[in-house]
Amino acid sequence: MKKTGKIIAIQDNVAIVEFLLQQPAIFDVLVLKNNPEIKLEVVSSAQENQTYYCFILNKKNEISRGDIVENTEQNLLIPVGKEVLGRAIDVFGNAQDNKDFKPKRFKSLHTHIPTEVDSAITPSEILTTGIRAIDFFTPVLKGSKIGLVGGAGLGKTILLTELIHNVVVASNANKESVSVFAAVGERSREAHELLENLAESKVLDKTVMIVGQMGENPAVRFRTAYAAATVAEDFRDHGTDVLFFMDNMYRFSQAGYELSTLMHAVPSEDGYQPTLPSEVGTFHEMLTSTPEAYITSIEAIYLPSDDLLDYSVRSALYYLDSYIVLSRDIYQSGRLPAIDLLASNSSAVNPEVIGQKHFELYLKCTQILEQAKDIEKIVSLVGLSELSIEDQTVYKRSILIENYMTQSLTVAEPQTNRKGVFAQNRQTLDDIEIILSGKLDNIDPEKLLYIEKIDQSILSEPTKTTVVQPEQPKEPPVSVKPQDLEPAFPLKKPLFKIQLPFQKKKRTSYIEIDPSHPPMTLTPEEVTKIKEEQKEVELARNRDMNIEEKYKALLIEGAELQTKHGIQPQRVENMGAAYSPTQMTDEKT
Image (cartoon, rainbow, N blue to C red; front, top):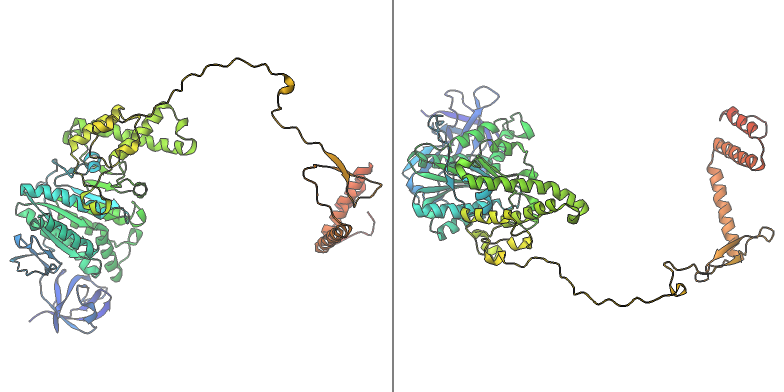
């Protein structure tokens, strides 16, 4: 007899199922009794006894309270093996490329056995990506984990696709590895375009795609990441090197957050689910390299609000060997790929791994870029010409290095109309040596934008020099009389005095008038009107004054009159001291 339960509550993509008799195990798959195509997955126990939270994996609109479910006593299974190569499938193993699919082997998403510390290996072999900025500043190790970190619209997917194009094609030539691509919560259009590009490059037969686009419910998106890791893990256990690509790691965390909210879990930092670190850790643990084979993981990580300190992002960075940060300021300046050379980091920057020459050039470049970052603040305030010669040289070389790290990408050729470049690291080191030697200090930095390499044509560019004018013959001095010289400042024009028409004859006042700018003449009617308006303003001001303000105004006026006529103001001061708003004397001021 099958174990059965009853749905007692539905909260969007989470159902609460009650089992009265035989209890299910965690991760067991339940099916609806009257429709076995509808699947649920047991996740955890609910608040009440004998009840469980279950993810609704599909067709949630066809489920109702009171429906009976049956326990299959199996976990979610994903097809594995050579049969999945060249295919696009979902988390249930269904084909998404409109082709017949008959897999032979399946593997559970939850049978992962943690790798023993003794059996884990430390990556030490450089994996060439063909992207100049990555190979020089953040080298990638074979078998390591790399993160492409950036906000919306900065080119994470383009950069990830370029890595797939460069690394997969190179590895396919040696027939050494397979590629697993996990599309978690991203656009289905991008997965479709990637599928077509891989087919055109003739590497699709060595690639498998597990798709859980953003239109799927959060339970499917959440489990798609584990399904892709399970496929990669199976290839590794059978001795095949794996290149694992994921777009996007943040959508995995976001799906878990949505489900955790529906299960009424107490939120953790930034509102995320309390189990986020363990979920991210379990996922990355499945991608560990072993003596049998390597798994090189490259993940795109979205930055919400360009915040590198977001809790979901920090939870993923702990497990990465290298992370490449994309900057919005660099993207808006037109330098692509928009990699922040100082914020990015790699554990492979070690002279024993990348070589002594590469390591020394890396230290010199980072030192120049860090100094230029401080100098740039001064330049924005006082200008470049106010700097010392040494600071000007550092600032100029930093711009040369940044422009040289731009590169035309193959997958972006239709948008940029520039042929893609596969950068060789040896050539990059030679070009950096030329920049640091000072041979390019006098050329226009824009000459290094999107170049393949520094060749003789750039080295022979004419430098900016000062043109010396031929010396003109000196003319004999001319004697000039003092009266012939013009003053440095023009003299004031002659002024004359006029009497204002409204002033009394007894007190005649005069003002100086410039003949070139005569004043406006007022008629007697206009003068009378102005006086009346002034009286109205004065009366209105007096009406608005209270008793205290009027009394103070009288005291001030009296003090001014006494001062003017030489009268001692003692009586006025005493009166002011004796005054209070509530009691006034009858004595006159």
